[in-house]
Structures are given as structure tokens and as C-alpha cells.
Image 1 (cartoon, rainbow, N blue to C red):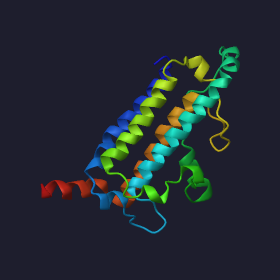
Image 2 (tube, helix red, strand yellow):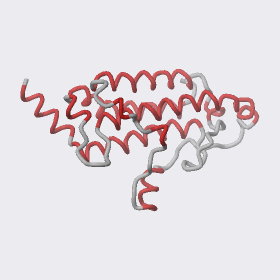
Image 3 (cartoon, rainbow, N blue to C red):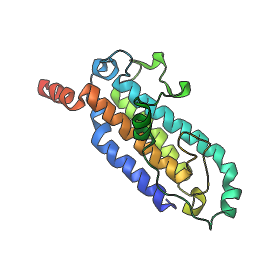
Length: 192
């Protein structure tokens, strides 16, 4: 990968997933798709939402490539390589979590349509495509490709990749809070 910062943020994403996503294939369909609380997504819906956002960022990245000539002109100017946790900041300011836009809400028909292994593979496939898409973009170009996202204060490509990792960790924490995945897996393992 040509951008050291993007590589670092993808590494963070991978490390987080190695601790969390490996648990998902071991969940029964019931544990994967049942909601523990009204109005809260199931584990499967959270993971599918992560897939949807990865896909959206990948599409936005493709569209943002029209900015490469502009980014090349600005390549010698400074740019940020880190972004703050906008999800925690929003919760602290508003006293509630951010609502997902309709395009990132898992459709009802997805429930019970896949098992945990298939769901994780879907997310990993999209992530690998995103990684390949940005792999040849130099850091000083990536730092000047900006996304039209006012909520995240117009992040550049590097920050957008870090935001994917921050967003996933946010959802992993929610899943742990409501679903206690480790306890579910221990019960399944004890049966075998």
C-alpha cells in the first residue's frame, strides 16, 4: 500500500476484527438475528450495517477519484492523517447515538438470510475490494481527496478509512453491551 497512514488504519481495522468478528460464525441463527431489545438491531443487522457502510465508502471513493487532479495540485500542502471519534462526540453532545441514514439501515429481508460465516465473508470481501481500490494512492494525494460528509467535517480519504475502524469499534461495543457474545459462544462450545 502506497499510503502509510491508510495502511495503518486498515491494520487497526484488521486487529479489531481479529478479536471480534471471529466470534460471529459461531453464533446460532437465533443469536445472530434475534433482537434482545425493541428498537435495537440484532448482531447480524449490526454486521450487515458495517458491510453497507464499507460498500458506501467504497462507492464514494470511486466517485472521489475525479478529485485526483485537484489533489495532485495540493499535494505539497499539509493534511490530516487522523480523525476524532465522531460517534462518541455526537453521543456526548446529543445524549443519544447517531441515527443511520436509510441507505445504511439493513433491510428486513436480510434477517435470517445468511449465517454468521456468510455475513463475515460479505464484509471481508467488500473490505478487500476497498483496500485494493486505495492501495495505489499515494499518501499526499489521499490526504487531499475529501469526502462531502459534513457530519464528519469533510474527512479526507485517510481519515475516512480511520473512520471505518472507529465506526466498527463503536458497533462492536454496542453488540458486546447488548448481546454478550463471549457468553453465547462459551455455551455453544460446551455443547460440543
